[in-house]
Image 1 (cartoon, helix red, strand yellow):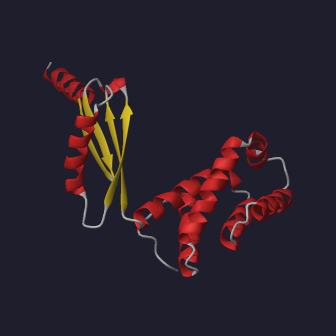
Image 2 (cartoon, helix red, strand yellow):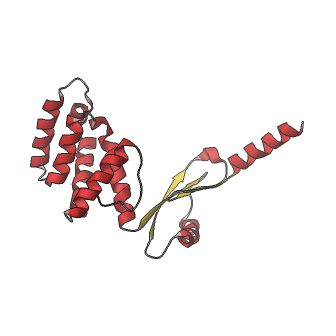
Image 3 (cartoon, helix red, strand yellow):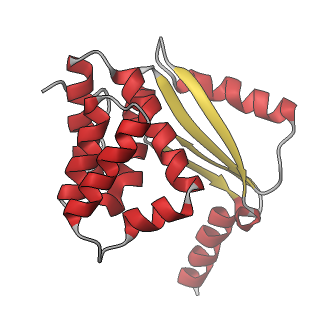
Length: 188
């Protein structure tokens, strides 16, 4: 088994890791990723397909046959088609979105991409984002690239919350206020 560059956990992680191993042996990683992304987008757009996949009453054999047909129509590799069939056979189609997201996480690590989410109380301007990106590049190793997304959450009051890879940095005013409130209560 080929070990993925990053460990993903849970049932979704096991399926994604097995798919990564099989796809890397056949040198089809990028193709499988593209197929899964297209399938994920198709499920998101097609309400009937989404309901069909989520319906627990339908027989597994019916789902296996239907997904084999969809895989054939989308010209999927046997790897992607087998994943869909196996998940339908095992009654795990409700985890399919998580498996695809886990596979995308593995592929991002394979390409050296490090995901980063910056949460602020107010939208940040381009200059502030550039400054934050420059600072965060210091956390990266050689050959890695930063994939930064900015999120606005007024609940943090001020400051920033940064999640980069597996690191979590909380510089929000909401957390500081909670700490000081707890310290004041202990003093009384």
